[in-house]
Image 1 (tube, one colour):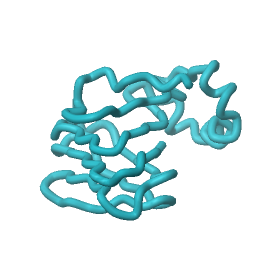
Image 2: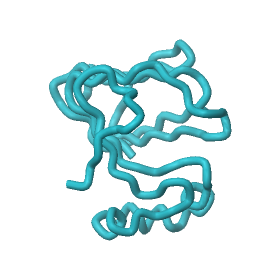
Image 3: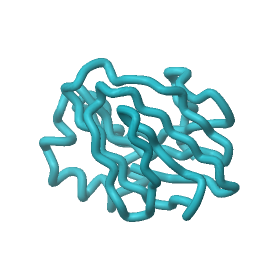
Length: 129
């Protein structure tokens, strides 16, 4: 499938897998060849794809996944999460003490410095980019 287990040890329960498209300004050509529509859209956004301090990836969380509160390495990054397949209930994110639900087709945007925690308590997986 190409999805790899999240490597920083941030998930406390269940599993969180990632499918990298760009990392630190470099395209994953193999993964982009499997997702040409998405990568084609991203090719038109050099401000996102050519940055050397971030990444673009699909994230897949299994039911019951809890991601520990964590921060990014700095506030140089803006985190943008687009819900692609999100359960209607039981999926939330807490950033800087504020908890919000997550919905398909909606963006969650925050900087990388405040503590963030994700919970997927529904019985359905969640997919975002």
